[in-house]
Length: 502
Ligand code: ADP
Ligand code: MG
Ligand code: ZN
Image (cartoon, rainbow, N blue to C red; front, side, top):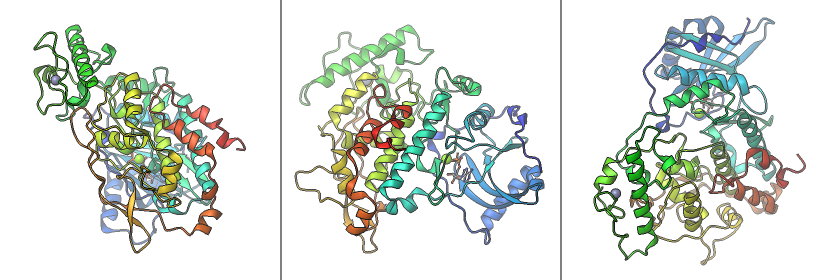
């Protein structure tokens, strides 16, 4: 059988505009499942796919479904090669409503940047009508949740090194992945193989080398007015941050609105926001539970907001309109924080505001406010929270250190109870009373079964957790720099002293 990349996929039919991908659900746990005993549901899905794309069945024996998200299903297929060997492939069936440019851009990222430097390659692509199936080499991998409790420090260091390598590579092409998380970075612990997948949300930098990512710029402008997001959205101190089609009057309005809010915010809680210079033209709803006419009539700020809340950078969470490759570096930082603390997911937030509140509990409120200012966003916090020392935080969560009374481990993140089976359970957090413009309070962490196994001290020592070098926490601090302009790049991070022998 000859497998080559077909250009056919670039001439996709015009279809309905796709859903915003930020609502996507997690795919099924990865990893190769038993090849026998498919559930009737999976069997039915395989039959549907075979009918929708009949060419597939001529080449592949579809064995199982290995991943399922809102925007694709991934199957395991076996092909008989010319030399008689059987080879395994991952068949990613995109939902038929995906925008053709979106699909083509995902493919182009894989074809141009993939196949090296820990980035998944592509083997072939099938299309029948509006059904597209991307064929990739199958990579056996483990879900991070399954192994995080037993990883050694050496393994963690390698994992993050290889993730940064993949990021440096795609960033060189001007690709912003936008959905960096463990489910999209396949990891084979035994063979130490790593692969970045899923360019379904990727976007291009201004000078991207991926032609189709440039075309996506036009698709991005559709505003998504969502009630309840208005206040986080409304105050924009930089005129450049308004929508591209916003008129001059609109710009002036938002500017004034932001100025009045900013001055109101500078006052202490008991004082009222500064009096409006021109009543009726300036926002006067800040810290109230109503929406004033100014805010009501504002145009929605348009900023890409893809990804998974817990991995989103502060500039994404606050809808900063210029987002760059630094957003992927932040996500890598969140992964490193998970790996060093042994907790996955680390930030478990269902929405952006909760995610921002959780970031604030770790990185500090003043620091977050200051960083947000640099990218033109005003963040308000009703309570001042100090930044955490990262080593203390990780060692405490790892159980290597007891939280002493004066020590601040964010309550939303600390596990209070150990369950009898060795896992531990997160208590709902005390309300931290964080107010972020629209006065939503910090919602409590849901009951989460944390995945840390009770590790014997001796075992921990063997795994190197007793001598994590300062460099690891220094790098973590640089990856989780709240300010995208000073945040370390993937290329710089690879030069970090933590990796000097690699
Ligand atoms: P989605 O856009 O639906 O998230 P992904 O490309 O992330 O799709 O794939 C979903 C899941 O399928 C991945 O998390 C992984 O478990 C599995 N998968 C994807 N590509 C491969 C591959 N080449 N080899 C093995 N498994 C894969
Ligand atoms: Mg994915
Ligand atoms: Zn207002």
